[in-house]
Image 1: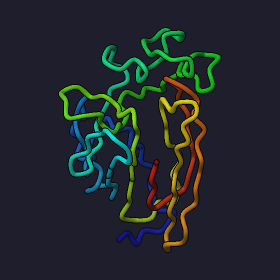
Image 2: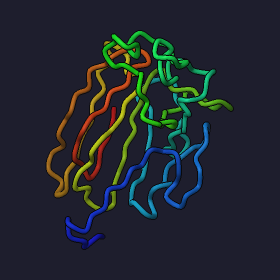
Image 3: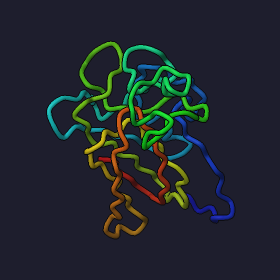
Length: 189
């Protein structure tokens, strides 16, 4: 457990491009503990409905800059000069996907046991746990949350008090949204 003072804390960006040991993460890699040693973060996934492939609770890397397999996860949106497809991500859409800020990799819950990454149409739960309290979680990015879907964050703070529920509004196919939160453990459902 960390005994560092808040003033000693550093800002860390985990963008799923590299593990904490510097290993490059590629399209299709399965991940779970790649940020545990240095940052104390573990990813666990599960499915709640039919479908989904999460052996041992792993998530899968999907490179959104890659043209091809799953255009609703492409970035930027084709109306912004990229290859992503979906009205939610268009410039006038609810979650414009025009400025990807250099992001390439996102985490997905895999659809089935297959060679290529493919996000599970039935969704699931992605849990990020931290061994030490996170004093400020600045940003969480979400992509391709369909209109009518009602996912949410459960944010658990240090001390085990009841979680705070932060509801998310689906902004449509290929949309991007960024959320700010504080957590020591968080589930996205």
